[in-house]
Picture 1 (tube, rainbow, N blue to C red):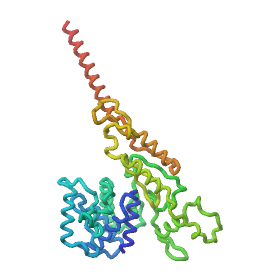
Picture 2: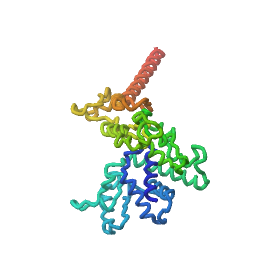
Picture 3: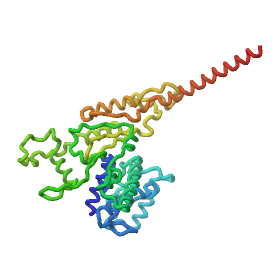
Picture 4: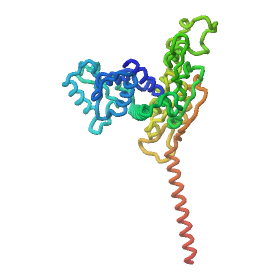
Length: 374
């Protein structure tokens, strides 16, 4: 059952547009922890039970204050566990703010050179904001699934009340992003895995029951419709039309994360990349020092100059550069959080206008008082 839980958990992560932000090794280690260290419960025996346990682990584990040690075959001794805790506390610091957000340790993470345990699979990803979103989604999905189990809700209900709704992004969650980019439908191989309108119904033909996974794999194997060979339907040319490594949306997302990762976080669904979402980083528009070597996407501050804060990020230039990168794959875009690069200037202008208004009001009052004294 563990193999199917890995597949299901990966599908759930992708449906919430977190593909590429959670290493596949981390997903496998999470599932291994649920099956090999199930205390205080017994090891899961079904896929649904294992999936629920993984959601509970993601939502309830204190990632900031405790490492997750995964040791399926008992290679890590009690002395090693004590060393891992000591190194974890030294890395996190007194306020638990430093080090990898997901401190996941496995037997392969021991470094013989410095004799230390370092989370190799999760050292760089997921980021803190991604892990926080993952934990919140896991908690909400786990609670909803428990309600469905208690009420006996099946997939035959409405879209909002069905268990499959945990694999969908709600309109409210889409509005929480800063920008949305709609991918050309011709580049989307399997629309049944979409984050907004996926299909999990079973079908049947002469060969037996066709699961959503099998249906998805057949579409991925066939490739995009525009690039398929034009042949007769009764000819089986599936094997000759397999396109390995043709993932234009995956490639463009990697380029966006490489070139614009310091300004924003990019989200997408690897199984159905019909949408790319962008979220500005909190410190993207902070004041920065000017440097001629690194002046791209910066604009000078108009007012309230300080020694170490002469420039800030130009959101318009960043968005134009992103849209230029996406011009071959995107058919539509929607900016939900267009941050002006002059937010602080607007605030300062508003404060100055208020002061001027108060000054004028004071001058009028003084002149009126002077006229009454005469």
